[in-house]
Image (cartoon, rainbow over all chains, first blue to last red; front, side):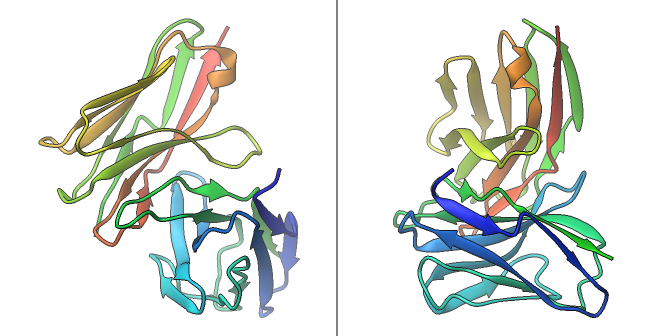
Length: 115
Length: 111
């Protein structure tokens, strides 16, 4: 399973606690993304970054923050404002070609639960 | 923004039969339509995609058809096998180049 590594696989946080999910890629991709997967709702975009030191909010950015200081790393912080009790967080990367979209490569995910 | 609807939410088929999943979208400017397969406990993986200048694309037992006028596209799996059991997601690129995913279809292939 090379390419994109997410850690940890399972994470528990207490109410009021912030936690950070790690995502590292060795594919030399410029673009990275964070999605949240909930049953019956597909994959919803939290944040994305198309280049180092730049990132944009997705559809459900409230309660989350990100940074992109290095090309290979795109950590996601889940703040205490995020009330979802349990979700799977998927990191992905792609190498955009001109103005077209290309294949997303996904990590194996982090399952986050609130105690 | 882009709105992607996927149907059905669950699909049970007999081994050897065909399965069809349909997605509709709202933004006529969308030009890229991939399909991802997620097996239980695993990460989503791209299985086929189509661009707006093509009406149909086939790869062995899977095919995707696109109707830009009606703004819908479909995934067709023929001669289904147990390993086809998974959740399938359609996606559409929005006007900003980001992918919007459908809610997913749970496909169960019964022997």
